[in-house]
Image (tube, rainbow, N blue to C red; front, side):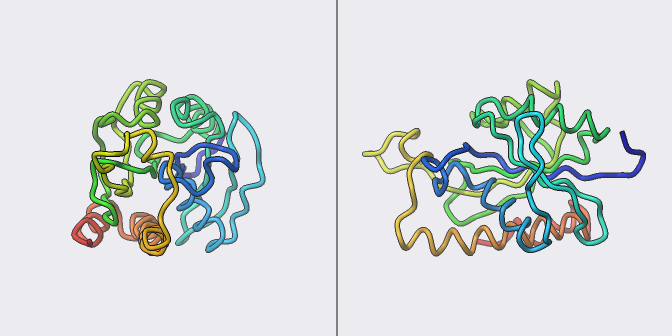
Length: 193
């Protein structure tokens, strides 16, 4: 639909009040922050996502949140990418990761799904794992909590304060990727706590 380069920045999560401030909605929270910071309202509703189009650091972007629940995130994002002619290298996926220590963020050029159902759905939909992503560490649960309960659970007051800073840092990392490229952004952000 467009000859101009567009970067699709999609945050993964689950729709609805029940999941709004849970660990599994880290991707949604980063996209919401970028939407606010760059005045890109998420008002369009198509292909089972909410999204908005605007500019960040001089780059034409689409910010998106799939509304099909985490384990079905891939098809809506693929439909939107196809509609706008966006290639895999111009995707940037933001999501929570239990295998990353709480408070850490990591930018990756590509990789497997690591057991994350949202990423698994994206790999299935696109037929490749060759897309950049930003992982937000939510840590593994203690022995008394199961994984599902942990990822769908809410933060403690102390964790919420840390997580707010982490979401802000993740937003800066996205801006760095757009402005300076993946390699520079990885060097600057992957070393942070």
